[in-house]
Length: 110
Image 1 (tube, helix red, strand yellow):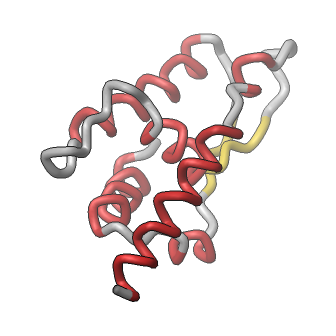
Image 2 (cartoon, one colour):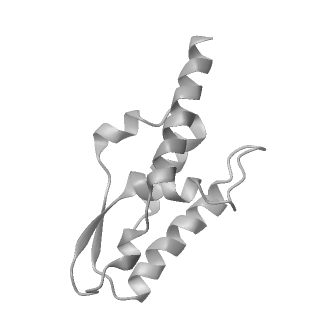
């Protein structure tokens, strides 16, 4: 029961975070200004995508595609950014598939 409660708390937290995610990086007027993108926030944004279906297990290829697409859109518009991941946030991820997705994204990211 305790493990199930932890999963529910994590799911609730991700749902609240994804509801608050904005695509403000797409609204930056000056494409020449460098900025930082939090990789975990980008991952939450991609996980909230309707094209990601977790009902039958991890859909990691589609998830990585969504993440690559978001980063490619920024690169195509000549945005200068640094993608960062904070070690302290790795403890937020509880589902093994999400932990794996985060690690794959870190290894795969430019």
